[in-house]
Length: 265
Image 1 (tube, rainbow, N blue to C red):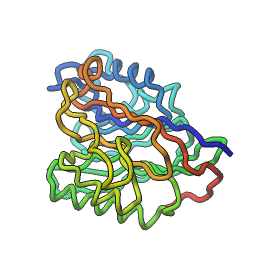
Image 2 (cartoon, one colour):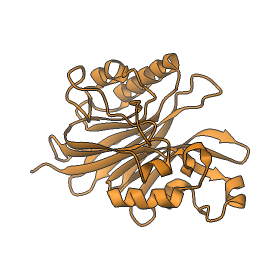
Image 3 (tube, helix red, strand yellow):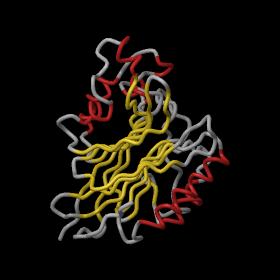
């Protein structure tokens, strides 16, 4: 059986607003994501609900942002609420062209004023019935908290995911020192899409701020795939949509085939 292609994108969408919250950009965001055409999308800062915006902003979508973005293109969505307030909540989301068989939002908050979660999904790729484990991450801006979150993520996956199964971890790592390679990639046998094996590749690509990136915050780590191409979408029109750039990777399964079994909590 030949290799199977998979296209993935990660993007911190800034709750659907441009930098400094000047303009609501969720409609333009949907158009640009659809133009990229990924199979799986990892999104951070997704507005699951905001009653104030729904009341005060013209053309604010009636649906939660993950459902509005996915409509008629990505058949499955999963959402994990991380930050809850009186008029709404936001968190991480995964959109997929394939069935999401299981999802779980793991709370990894280290400080009460900075709520964080890791959204884990098991996705069944149609035709091959290959279970792919996907995690959408948005980590702390503080190094000590971030290290603890990386350790918690690795421990969680070691406990419930067979190490022979394909794995994708993508999102906003806030990891400008590139500590995730040693703290996460080595431990789980991952590679970062802009290079090769951990410790033997170039640094992740620059993704922040989106107008002219200077920091390496947004990442895609994979296991069980070879990376065909990785790309960062910065500058216009992306810089008008969010303060982060979008990161894209074209992947091939190393060993496509039938794998059974999805973790159940």
